[in-house]
Amino acid sequence: MRNIDQKLILKAIEESDNTLISTHKKLCLPIINRIYKKMINGIKFDDIKVCDTLIIDGHHRYVSISKN
Image (cartoon, rainbow, N blue to C red; front, side):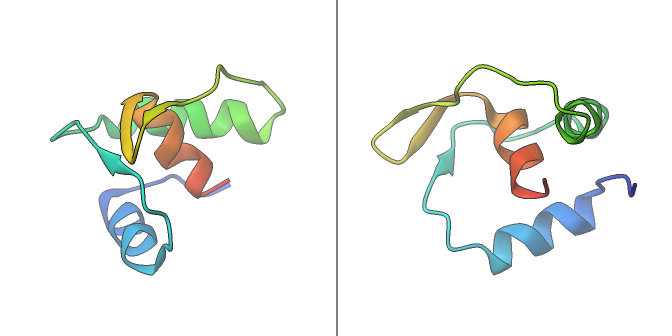
C-alpha cells in the first residue's frame, strides 16, 4: 500500500474528469492517508456533501476516494 503524497494528488487531479471543486485551499496529507487506509480496509464513511459543483463537506474523503 502506497502513501498518498502531494505529487500523487496533483497528478490525479490533472488526469481526472471530475468536475467537483473544493472550497478548501489546503488539505492535510496525514488525514488523507488515514482515511485512504481505512477505506481500503472496508471502513465506510458518510457521504460527501456537494452543492452544485462545490464540495461542502468531505474534502479529504473526496481525495481519498479518488485514489481508492
